[in-house]
Length: 170
Ligand SMILES: NC(=O)c1ccc[n+]([C@@H]2O[C@H](COP(=O)([O-])OP(=O)(O)OC[C@H]3O[C@@H](n4cnc5c(N)ncnc54)[C@H](OP(=O)(O)O)[C@@H]3O)[C@@H](O)[C@H]2O)c1
Image 1 (cartoon, protein in one colour):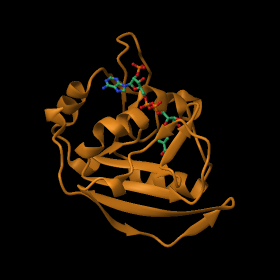
Image 2 (cartoon, protein in one colour):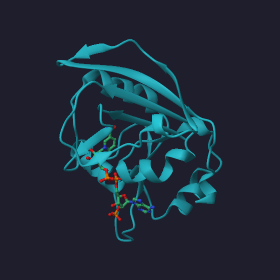
Image 3 (cartoon, protein in one colour):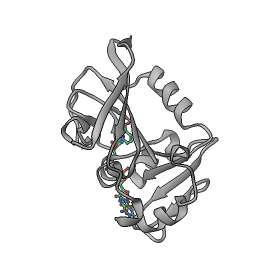
């Protein structure tokens, strides 16, 4: 599994159920990186998507503890164990963890790679991504040059995990 996220200087990712910044270039990057793949997300992240609907051209897996929760066009699972069973046969680079805060915290060390859009800004936030620079198993591999859009400076970075936690072990 690979993670993809957009963070600010505080590793903040969201506030009151929404994303912090609007960056069309990052949305394009997200589309490119996820199209045709299986996405794993928490129920709140699904509800933050446009219209609260699953993303097209991708398999959408939504985690919730609510057994009555249903959503058209998505596979609803109720535990990490069920997720592990479901994605067991898929190649690692075909499964993308797309958030939010709770799932990144629970599953980041089960990811081989993390694609992090780093935005040079700070905003009020209540949702965060783990700071991989503070985790000794993660290494920053590369970052693109800084770009600018909508007055925001950002770059696309890639991290690799040197000590993978098997999803089945959680
Ligand atoms: N910047 C980015 O790249 C980015 C990406 C994604 C999300 N976000 C932001 O992140 C925020 C949402 O994060 P969040 O932590 O509040 O929500 P979340 O992780 O998207 O969803 C949380 C929900 O997922 C379900 N869940 C979590 N762990 C589970 C488990 N082990 N088993 C079964 N269900 C489980 C629960 O649903 P139930 O309550 O239904 O049981 C839980 O309330 C939003 O502001 C969003 O915009 C930002």
